[in-house]
Structures are given as structure tokens and as C-alpha cells.
Image 1 (cartoon, rainbow over the protein chains, first blue to last red):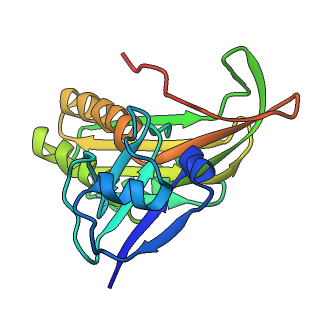
Image 2 (spheres, chains in turn purple, red):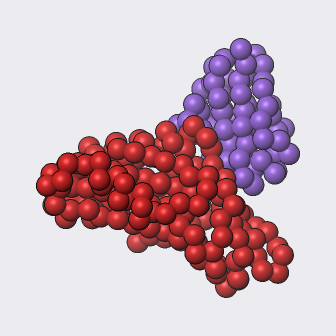
Length: 77
Length: 145
């Protein structure tokens, strides 16, 4: 298993990748996943996070098999 | 309750008719409909085209959750949401939301809720192609209220 990480829209361009698989060891939170996949420590108001299709905060816990996504504010409709 | 992600141009009025034809006539007294189409201007610039990106899986999940929330808050017979993704030309429809209910109050209010919740929660992102050749991500939606 692994943690699947996806990036969308401007964050995909910023991260330079649309998807990456991470080994779950040492990854406790969404913030850890962001740091491990991009080298970014924090995130900001313009970085939204989803865990298994639900919007969550950076402090939310992650586990093996999860899908984590990072994206900017949504602009549909 | 139906949620449809459209990768090609679609006719919202035909989609509306098809869905309404599947309902039992006489069971609803009110149909509220919203159709959003692509403008050829934004923030003072001419816009030639747009690409709509989404998050397959999460987008459908969020739209279904929004429709379920509406059905909990108001007495609805049915809801319908269509949303375009991919490359879109000015004047093409982007989104259709429709609500069927016995009475107009629930239909109007629930349909407004669907659109505002979609705008703020459903993972879609617009990238505009301007007439001067520049491309840019739309950073935020205009307020609905």
C-alpha cells in the first residue's frame, strides 16, 4: 500500500506533478504529506486539502491507503 | 437525484426535459432551474475560451452530498445537476441545476442552495484563455449574494 497524492489546477503546476505515491512511514498528517511531496512546510489559505474526497484541514491524520489531494479555491459553476 | 459530469457540449434544456419526463406528472407543482453559461468577458478582459478542470471522483461525491443536503432541508421530489468540464467556448452552457418540489418556496430555495454550495465546495477550476493570448487561472468566484 501507499498514500496517493494528487495536485490540481494551479497547485499541480506549482508542484510540477499531478500525482505521486508516498510510502506511509513517518507521515502522520496531511501537512506531513504536503511537506513530503513538495518540500513545503506550511501551506496557506490558498491551499485546500482533501482526504478520500472530503475536504479536511492540514492537521487531519492520514493512514496507509489514503488518497490526499491539494488544490486552490474552487471556481466552478 | 442525478449528477452528470459532461465532457462535451450539452443542451441543458434537453437534459431538463429528459429528466422531467422521467418523473411522475402531477407529483410536483414547482420546477426551479438555473443555467450558467460562459461569458466572453471577465475582470475587464475579453475571454476567448476556458478549460474546466475537475477532480474525478471527489467532484461527483461532493455534488451528490450537496444534493442530499438539499433533500434533507427541503421537501423535494428530485434534483438534477449537470456540469461541463474540458474546453468550453463562450456562450456554451457550463452548469444546470434543477429542483422539483410540490411548492415554489422549497424549489427556489433549494435550487439557490445547490448553486451556492456547488460554487463554494465542488472541486472545479477554470482556466481562461484571453484574446491577447494570455492564459490565467480564475482565482475566485464572484459572490452569489
